[in-house]
Image 1 (cartoon, rainbow, N blue to C red):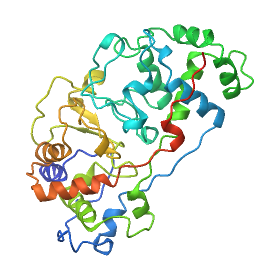
Image 2 (image 1 turned 60 degrees about the vertical axis):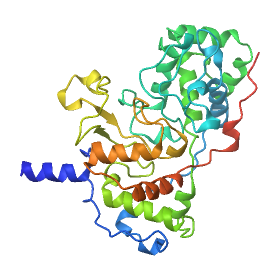
Image 3 (image 1 turned 135 degrees about the vertical axis):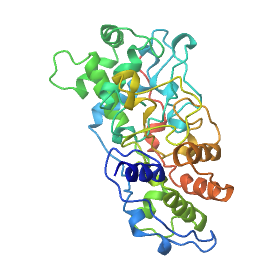
Image 4 (image 1 turned 60 degrees about the horizontal axis):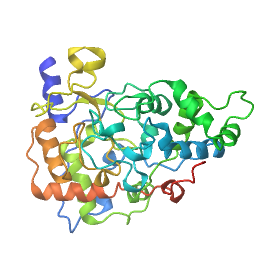
Length: 340
């Protein structure tokens, strides 16, 4: 029985945290003849479209101000938007982001778009939600370096223009300006950063939203077993898997969840990243080691599936992944006028 499970595991390309259907066996079609009618419904059932979400207007507005606020860093130069620029896919394009005094982080900064729907936050999942996640960068020495929550509160209270924004967002609170409310407002804003795309139009019934080559890429993605982990509305982001399942990952320095649990089963265990907007968020992986999406696809085939993915299939998959590039609301991209 154990042997049968291990054989299935290697074939599927991931160690599932939830139950999945077996990998699909679909014969590829030439890109010129692929159509939505040739897509197996079982494959499409693994996905779900995303929709824009709205929050409490006053809290979202406050959160947007705080997201762009560099005074929430020790040197007054680093904001959330520094590492997650909303006009560049929500990621800064660096292998690791640079915080106060140019200190490098340890892991690649993932995009902030669609983050609210992830199973947890950070690569190792150490924060259960966005409000908890927001506390980390604000206080971390290698990021915004505010050190203590009281310092964040003190800075916000010193900027008079924030008083009416906090009062509007948290009416009836005697001490509306504090660290906890600030992180709640940040989370409220980030929760609105959803990016529906052509892929969602296709899932919602627009059969002409994707080209033949893009549909072929979807079929290949399903055939190879990538869908076992990259599934659901985010095409990932919902489970943890070991990187280097069939072949050890080249960089073994960062052990992720093992550093939290110290359980051997958690070595090289990562949250599966969402593939939404992946065409915009190079470099890839937790270590930011690969800048080309095609190369990233081949590495996943080799280290997770024990497969050598052909150039043609890489091209098709890349085309389909491009349909996951979404459009944030126009109100999200423009920095607000911060209070003096």
